[in-house]
Amino acid sequence: SFADACLRAGKFDTVTVAVYRAAERTGDLAGAAQQLATKASRQLHLRQKAVTMMIYPAIIASIGSVVGTAMLMFIVPRIGKAIRDATGTDLPAYTEVMVVTGDALRANWLLFLGVVATLVVAFVVFRRQLAALALAILRRLPLVSPLVAAQELARFFSVMAAMSKAGVPLADALGTAELSVTAPKLRAQLTKLRQSLIDGGVLRVLIDRVEAFPLATRRLLIAADRAGDLDAAFDGLASDMTEEVDRRSMRLIAALEPLMIVILFLFIGTILVSVLVPLMTMSSKLGA
Image (tube, rainbow, N blue to C red; front, side):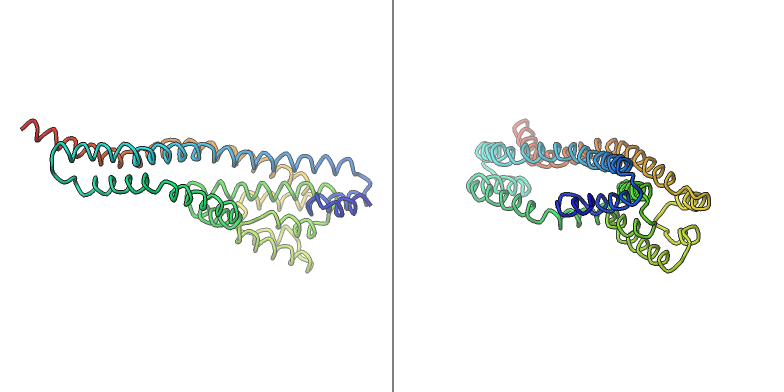
């Protein structure tokens, strides 16, 4: 069958294979392909939104790191030496630390580059573990956790919409869709929901146990189950959650812009202070 061919090809995920397998029973391969295209479009949009959110902090962090390192290696040691020679006195402790650090980096720049390269390689090798750790941290941040939750729900309902419209039984669809969820609490509740459905439970009775869903989402699914229109409910929720991701992403980016500027100022400012303090001290002594 076409679904078996997709499975043997090894290039299609479990959702695609399950949707095509169900579509073969109904004879609606074209409709299944359209649903999978919609799902892929939504998930691609979510990934692009995540990448867009990371671009601005990455650019600011890169610029700050390069500028700060250059100042520390080349500017601070020279100014520190000039102040020491001009005044004939010891530099302030903070300035001395910065000067020694800059001299050490410049004298051992090959070692410094080696450490940076090692960190980059380690990041590439352990990127999945680091991504999981970062996601766990982000779920605890007040400003970011609602966005992460919306992304999880958008992925889940996108898969459920594609599978339910293809005629996949609800319990089977849940078993596949929960694989797209990484939030431990939501995934555990979905697993219990699926098992309860297999044991003969009714969705409109069981859905309230999935507390990870917003209350409005649970009420909508209860009404849709009573009306026998879960397909449209899943599709509408997928669209709504995708729009929610857009809204929350824009808010987060708007909050990140001033925050990153403050962080950059603090990073560069600490280096500048190490030079400005002895300069002001020297000028006051010369004026006296």
